Structures are given as structure tokens and as C-alpha cells.
Length: 127
Image (cartoon, rainbow, N blue to C red; front, side, top):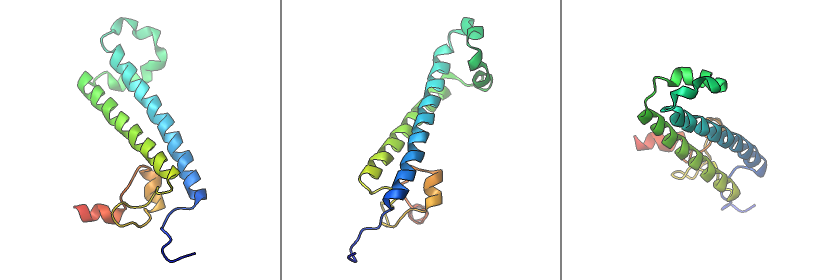
């Protein structure tokens, strides 16, 4: 073990993160579908009662305008892209390393924000 060993998470940790991120991607893609179908159903109110599964989701989103719906979709797509980039970092074994300080990002933070590339420390420096 040389001194110049780069700091990184163990393969075991990386695998755990990978599973977590994969799960989040699946959920995010599911949410994106919901957002998009809400968006599609917007101008199509005649079919409301044919989609009972949609009701619960629809109650709250009835007040949402098309604009905020598409904003939501855009945000969701970015989130999915960020998560997929995180998977690439896991493959490269650079995942969880702060791109500013080069130190490991706190595990708790990664569990909350799995696509984070900055440690709290680095984030605070940006302020």
C-alpha cells in the first residue's frame, strides 16, 4: 500500500451505493412517467374516470399548470441524468470523492444526495 493511494470507497461500499442509485433511478423514471402522463392527460379531461389509479396523483396536481408540470419533468430528467453519471463514477471507482477537496464525501450525505460530487466542506467554500 503506497502513500499515494487515492482515497476511495471500497468496492463493497460502491456496490451498496450502486444498488441505492439504481433504485432511485427506477423510482425517478417511474415518477417522470407519471409527470408526463399527467401532462398528457391535461387537455383530455373526458377520460378521467377511465384512469382510477391516476386519481390519487391527480388530486394534488389538478392545480398544477402545464408549465410547472414541464418544469417538473425537466428537473426529473436532470435528476435521472445526474444519477446515471453517478453510476459511471462508481464504475470508474471515483464515486463519492469530492471533486474539490479530493476527500471522501460523507456517507450520510451520499445516502441523501447520491449524485453529490461535492463534500459539505467544499459546498461551504462556495458560499
